[in-house]
Amino acid sequence: MVAEHASATEAQQSEARQRLIDVAEALFYRKGIRAVGVDEVIAAAQVAKATLYRHFGSKEQLVNAYLERRGRFSRTKLTESSACSDDPREQILEAFRDLEKNLENPSFRGCAFLLAVSEHGELESVRSISRDHKLFVRDHFATLAQKAGLSDPLFADQLALIYEGALATIVVRPDAHPGSTALALVRSLLGTFGGGQR
Image 1 (cartoon, helix red, strand yellow):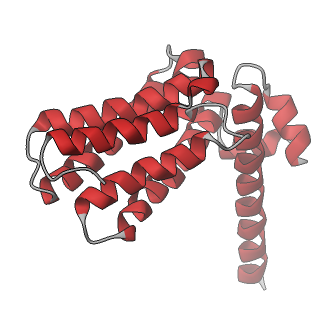
Image 2: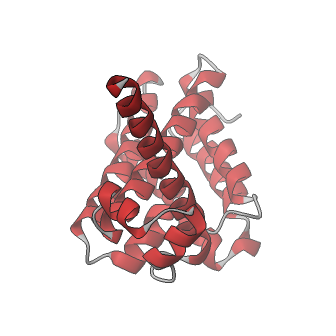
């Protein structure tokens, strides 16, 4: 009986934590981290203030949880795009096709990590999580480049720069269609490094 009660309590706590992250993710991304206070998150999640602080301790920890989850989702999507083909060049192109679709989504308001650093760059935890995510993106492209026989480190750096540039440009110049421009640049880059264009 005691074990059943403990199990039920743990499930409730896990559910509350999940709900807090769900709400925080939606609010932080849509409104901005600074614009959303913990009271708004608590009210939207319908939990007690003590529940939030029991799970996260501070708003910074909640922000970190939001970014970590966002990173897991983004990295999974990027990795899954590699499953489209056995050809690593096509895998690179598919990553940029997915990026183009993402940037054209009306709900997309910019890279969550760039937005977070622009608001809270003074927090080492925010910079660290964001930096690790960006390094993953670069390393992902480096791995695909190696498989494609394009071992020049400059190639992976250029891919990452195009990818990140598109994410930054969409915020201030959505009419420039940075997703399609990035895809065209990558096609050209693949041709420059050999193997023709697709």
